[in-house]
Length: 229
Image (cartoon, rainbow, N blue to C red; front, side, top):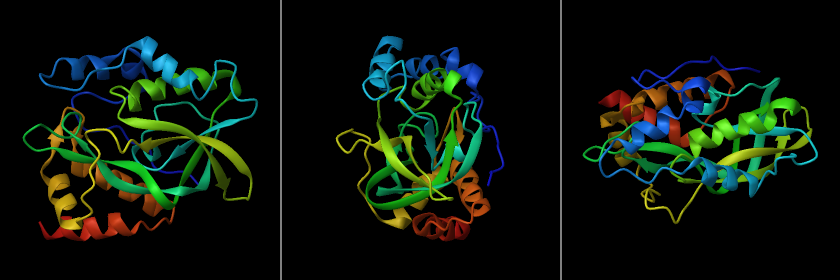
């Protein structure tokens, strides 16, 4: 089951080509007070810590639960419904950059501890897996805000595979602990940055989940508040 693919509305487009050229990192570095951008060497070392250059000896999947559902920016050969345990999808990462500002920070999705999460598993081509994973690291780990992990993943047909997922780092200064739905909705409705509005990110993700027949209670609750604004 596939989702409709889109490109973000911001003036910096999240495409494989732009990410590979370093446009995302360059833009962040140009913003005064922004977080440190990881170097190519630091990103490579971070990837090698969990996935060596030779791979893991089996197919590698990407677990998509947020914007990767509608804008994956990697080449893959299979997309299917999947579920992981031990983590749940939540708007728990504050952003002052791509979809927010220092005056009006936005919220991004992360995989937080506890529960389970349904999403899509994207199977990478073996011959191009490492190249595509490095592109993802340049996108998701540009400031080191997430903790990448290889997680046991159950596909819709019952197969068990390993997928790369970007979980939240609770020690990171941008980890957002507030669970209040109204607060989250207000931040999402007011925030925008060089990648576009936070509400666009929310709406595109909610549409993708609907296409997959996935009901996310937090996102439904936030959506109800957004409609009132």
